[in-house]
Amino acid sequence: MGPIAHSLAFLLAAGLSPALAVAWLVRPGLRRHFGERLGRLPAGLEARIGRLDAPIYVHAASVGEAKAAARLVEGLESAGHSVVATTSTLGGRDVLRSERPQGDAHLFPLDHPWAVERLLRRVRPGLSVLIETELWPSWIAGCARHDVPVVIASGRLSDRSFPRYRRVRRLIRPTLERIDAVGARTELDAERFVELGVPEARVAVTGDLKLDPPLDQPALSIDLIRALADCPVVIGGSTHEGEEVALLQAMTAAEKAGHGFVLVLAPRQVARCAEIVSEVKARRRRVVRRSELEGRHLVPGEVLVLDTMGELAALYATASIAFVGGTLAPVGGHNLVEPVHAGCPVLFGPRVENVRKIVEILELGDAGKKVPNAAALASELVAAFDDLEAVRVRGEIGREALEAHRGSIEATRRLIEEVRERRAGPVR
Image 1 (cartoon, one colour):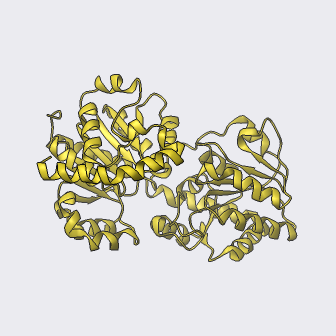
Image 2 (tube, rainbow, N blue to C red; image 1 turned 90 degrees about the vertical axis):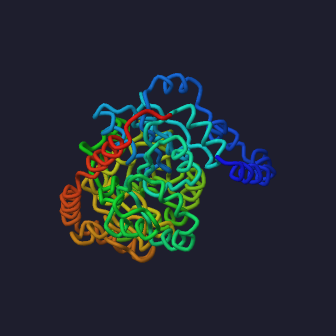
Image 3 (cartoon, one colour; image 1 turned 90 degrees about the horizontal axis):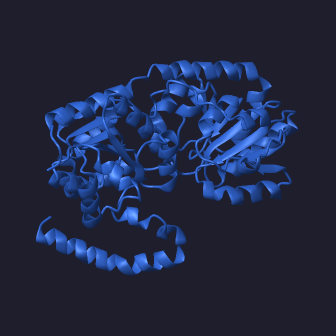
């Protein structure tokens, strides 16, 4: 880093320090793991990583990306590569650690030159993989300084983010020109990366890591099997504020039509579980947290709030139908692959910018239905219970359609290996 860049970094750090100090005092959660944000490795991890020879460094933003990253990491390790993985959130890190308990997972540093430099010197990666749209300028510039090639995997530029990037493309072009390869999700994503400044020869379509169906359906724990064994189940997965209320209203509508079931609510942020429990109790329904299940057998009309990580994918196999969140709320949609792979048909709202490809697949085969609002969600849920056999067939259609998209993990692994072969050698 040159003197000008160092000066700018110092001024930025100085300007932000009062805000960081206030945040440090009023938000205790920020104090935890803050050393990792500054480029320090967790206790015990530095020695293990130090023994690795130029590992592949895989970074994913949060929970959904971490699940896709975990499967890519598994493919890389199966091919003999050593891998270190990070996420930006504690929830994502928990997913990585649960998916690969013997692996190395920690938090990504702040995108500041000092924190980046500190981590790069400790990890000494041989290649950096950034999942989807993790275009961190300081990290990418740091990798360039250390001669670490950078690959974007499952590269995505959404309808919302692309116009913003396009407005500042002159500023971000140096960052994009440092990227060695982009494995884009779709042709449209590939075109957008090229338009922003990634050389066309470095962009290929490798598919969506989230669309690549897992080899096996994850197993459900015995206590959950017993708790849900005797009744129909509806799941609200990865929900946001307002979407739980819509599902509770739909539950009431279904009961008035003569259909009873257990509603499982799995909020995108586990920290919201307390407010969801309060909302359910305010409607005079019996509610239980997953962590407090303690051998109970649930009955229609009750609500289970999933306050644990890593169980939602397996739960989908128990459901007659599911609603995937972030789609009525203005978020853009979350993981639709998990319920579809489990043979569970899905409902979703109109905000599906982030999952457009799989929505197209599901709507084409009628395995998924878009509902414009909460009232339509209730109507579709009632209609589903009026003909559960038709719903089951829709679920099987969705599972078969998903199989046609198998292979993105393998294609991404090959792209990473091609880049590494071109830029062979440890970090200098």
